Length: 125
Image (cartoon, rainbow, N blue to C red; front, side, top):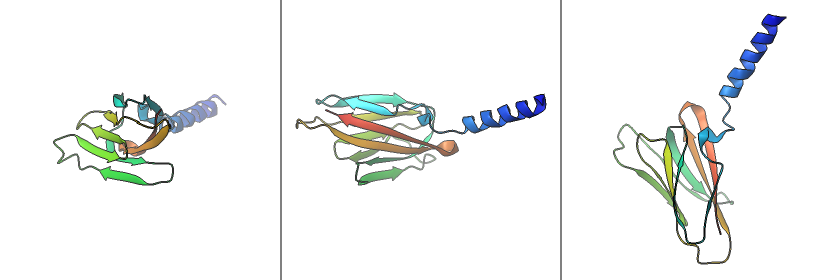
């Protein structure tokens, strides 16, 4: 009986280790003030591609060949730019100022190594 319990716990631990619900260490939400600015977020995934999209699915996408990449890769969509420096587990988010009184939101979606998928909801007031 002990052996069965240990096997079950081992399998559960292995499944939990493959779970991408933790967003690969990156935050699930980021908020910018109306004046915009820059924010650095870190995680533990080697980012292979970046997509910035709105609620309707309109987007801008870029994937990277890091073997030939010598400079920071950037993707811009509407008011948000996401930069990914080579050999670093961080993203640099830059938001343009919001001149309206309306709140706005975009989604940053990335695929990382080891089948990791992450999504960051970016809002600005």
